[in-house]
Image (cartoon, rainbow, N blue to C red; front, side, top):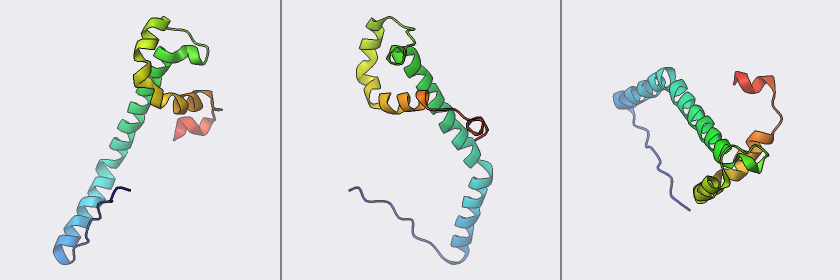
Length: 95
């Protein structure tokens, strides 16, 4: 079991500055980082759809290229299938 890094809380002025930094990050950069992570996930799922689409019935690329990329894609296939085949809702587009 890997050990987690625990940040020690500092007191006084240094603790106040640390708290201000965390608040500023939350206000400025947190939303951008979540959007970047969501965009990366969408691009990865699109790549898997293009290369392994024949697994769900969408043949796009010839099987030769899909087989060449298979060792790199295998760890992501289960989550990709679950995401592609799940029922969509209007709230998925909002959040």
